Length: 208
Image: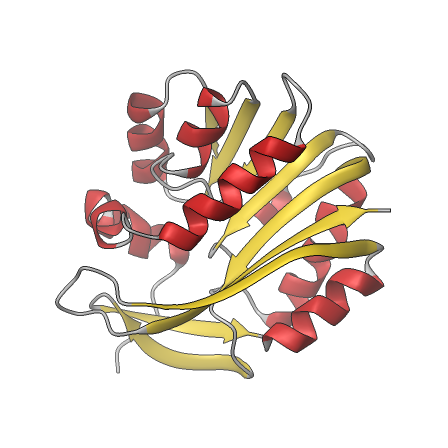
């Protein structure tokens, strides 16, 4: 296997193909809709790993939220700005973001931490909790697995992946001061010839 590609390299190369492959994620849309129903009008939402802006930023802005998205891949940010002009999108590595405590009504992170080492993932979950206002909501989705730094091929690209089991993730969210209010698991097959079935977990947690 060749050198694992960075997230920026992978998603700059995939671009619209990623959106196409994952366009039928019914569980993701359900999690976003459920979030929007819990948020106040004009809620400030941080979308970490915003991709092309669809579906998260698109659905949330349509629901009246003020969405700010960050993605490490410049190509994705360009696509998001074109697709969801009502939201704000910037290029940025989530590990370099800094916000005051209690800045956001909600934080969303859909499948955006799989290429981070486990230690960085744990750090980011704690930061998400800190950035939320009291009563604020985190929606986090990933491919649950007990893996740390495993080399795989994702949609034709060599990557190094890390994750936690669903049970471990719920424990880490609770340890960060969050209460699990919604959980859904599913098996999804991306619409791409180089992609196989993926288990998914969607967790919504409220800051105490």
